Length: 266
Image (tube, rainbow, N blue to C red; front, side, top):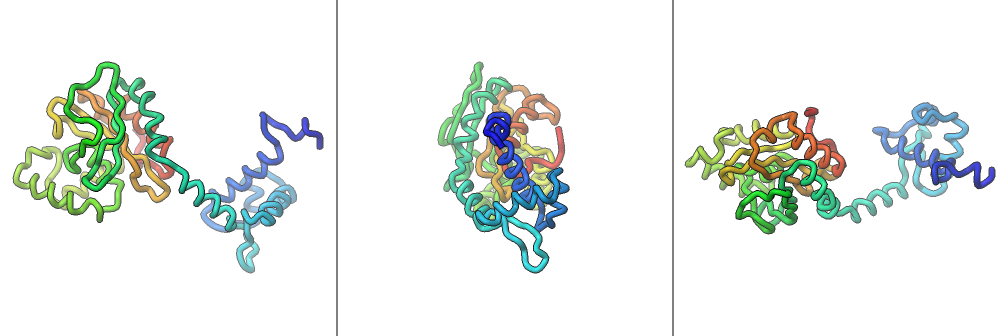
């Protein structure tokens, strides 16, 4: 085949097809037969077999036991682990903050879980900036901030438990801190369930009077929050399901995540 015949849309047509087949194999829950994979890719079995033979030789595919079904091989595992090691969640999310601030008209915070809790590491101010004493390095509480609630909903509980217990004890003596939830273990689980279903957390003036916030996670391959993006403003309507700001926030976080964010569409 000539170079001209092989090239397609700036790439190599046969390579595009081979990589498509490999991606289809990766999307399967387990080993598959040649005919199953060929059907899934819309290819003939003979064409699929030629591609699989090359991937077998390179170690990207292996045949599983006596069934001779095809599955991902050790080279695919090494490639995936290398990609994981090089992926920088914070910098990739930070690159999207200016666009999100422009789309929503709200200030955008980026936070990570550090030694002292949910910590703001990036800040993109809106065109009409919100007046607040918060800034880079600020630590957000778990129960009465949208950022903290998001980490609570999508993080392993053990690293957060000491902070959670302390905040629950305080809220039990001062219920106005969290007027939208019951400050008990059961109340926390009910709140977390609701947040995970919606895909984002929101508060209205609980942490900073006069300010509203909504936050959503950027999830890794295990479905855990690597960072949280928070929108900060003054209009309480933005925290309602179906708001434009909530839609923009969720779209951004979903595009940056490796696991689904939220179970319900807004």
